[in-house]
Length: 324
Image (cartoon, rainbow, N blue to C red):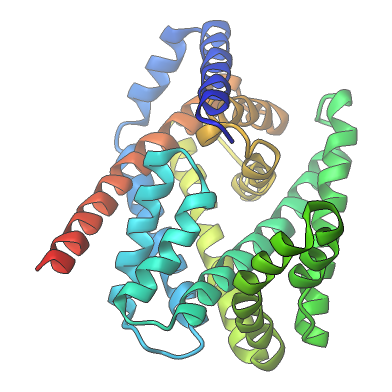
């Protein structure tokens, strides 16, 4: 994606955000932000705990335990800084984690394979949560009519994604490398062969982990589930800070339904505007106000920036260590 196109998409997202704020009312949102108060600190703590849990999942995804958990946690925080501050999402952050793991002593294929395993299993649990949450909203009939088709498409896509992961785990067969080889007829055989040479060692580590280590696979899935639960608790904490009554399932329905934001709007840097719009829609669907949804989105951006600051400090320390 060119810089110009990224800038245009970012500007478009910012314009959508401005329209949303104008419709809800800046004074209403500012009042809600003020009412969150201590909720910002709680959200930051819960999000930091979420990243620590994901670091544990990444640590357990390493085929060979060559690094300490502390080292992997530093890599996880550094990756968060890359993702937040570059607006590139996982496209740059995930390879950066692999490179940092390799820098710390993990073998190249193992490092990038572990990152692929963790991200795949994180996404898999996200897909399950999203499928359940979106199905609940469809059953309740609370989503706008024109969203029914796209939501059903998202649910179907997540079903295909789950099936693909199951095939890899049960049969021990990779799906990416064969697909890239077939794409050679379109993109050129030399390009496809070069891509296969880079992807194959990483996919072998991933498939071997899923097929030959079912106990470890289950462990990492449970760790990822705990991480997602912390994000739902973050929503509950903000709702409580806003003095909004809610049911026990509401934070999980909102969190699960919001999982498709990064997938559906991956082309918008930082999902600016898209994220706020989806949160406003989901909060209204569950029975809250759009203002509460916009406030939640803002809280999440602020706490992510705070944690990203810690990640920048980690990156700086790692750079100094290499120079030293």
